[in-house]
Length: 205
Image (cartoon, rainbow, N blue to C red; front, side, top):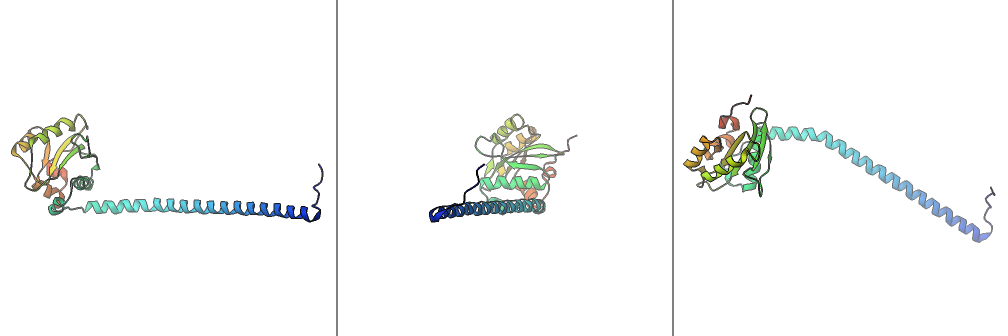
């Protein structure tokens, strides 16, 4: 292996100096990049730890909030359809159901679906309307036709902030489609009585 020859003359010395400077710049840049990546990773790790620590706290705070949830009828009346569905979901969660809003186009007469260890699977059809309006019996037909076959429901219920026609209530009572009119909704949402108690649901064996 031939020994490295020292640069001779001003031109070679200048070239060697430029090479050394370029190498130094690359080294400094690499070090800075490495330091920035470590800082970035440290920040990400810190955020992840903070999120993990705050998650249970936020969950407990939400649980406490829902446990005390009361929704007056005046508030319900001011809602739109979508907000009403989310409110019904939250009321179910308050009462111990694991519930989610599923309503939308092609929902097959299910706006909220939930599950309870004692009462099974529930399908809720929400009908937010004017106070004086009434839900007709055709809604009961739709819910009965899809709650079990399409959604596997053990409990089907129609909830409205208005009323139901006599034929709708009677048909629902005969065919196990539960209903909450304005009066029953007030007991559930505003007074805080659990839905299972309002509907008279029995525990499954």
